[in-house]
Image (cartoon, rainbow, N blue to C red; front, side, top):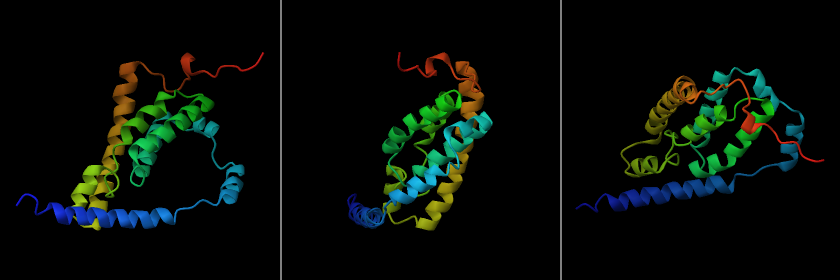
Length: 178
């Protein structure tokens, strides 16, 4: 009796994995075009210094939350954290300003079945349709971004005594060479 729901859930999970495999097979980069666009310099790390720190926290939180809808949480933070730290140091802002919201937001992908394992399990039951999951998930994602932004700005920063406007001594670039 308890196993009656297991087989349909496993079948739906297998269906989701087949769809993901098709999407991944079609995912490709045009490296020449990527390089050409990167040379145009639309936004670089030093441009972050012009943003208000609260906007940086919100942007990082929203970007990471949306990225984890389609990518592994562990892979996302493993790739982004060194990049965010480097961008923060290059911009002269506190690296924790980007690291804290990124680390917190990496677990908040609620809109798609691949966002988190509980999402996949819930979707695999067949009781939730994709439009329902996306609608509810995007609302939860938005709330999570607001909470992470507020929590980082109003609680973590003051609690740790962080000056988000300044680069701390421990993060200052070390000169290389003689």
